[in-house]
Image (cartoon, rainbow, N blue to C red; front, side, top):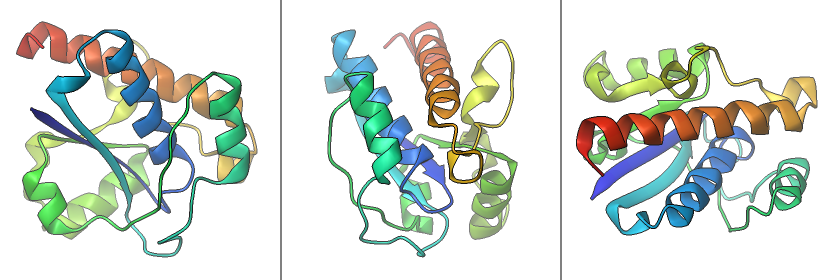
Length: 153
């Protein structure tokens, strides 16, 4: 089993979008049994809340379904994960601060696996949930292709 964690700030927009998109992607490829997939926030500011309604509507418009309750990332979560995929440079900094700089070999920006490395656009500020969806889908597909090539999933 490959334990994959997606991380953003509050765990109500980008990281749950990534969690649910990745779950759908591996399910469609028939390899969901090879993964443990979850998401967390670096902050506890949204803990206990569901997916932000505009993000949920965007997922549903792409036939991505699933539930989620926001929770904060802990050091134990990082230790137990195989991959921690953050949405942007700020999230990367926050996770590295949480770990004291340890475990950097398994902490990546999601879109670093794509042909155009970048931060995932933050729809909380831009209100552009479609762009965030496209960035996340691109990152999830590129990451899965990386795993298939390197880990023979």
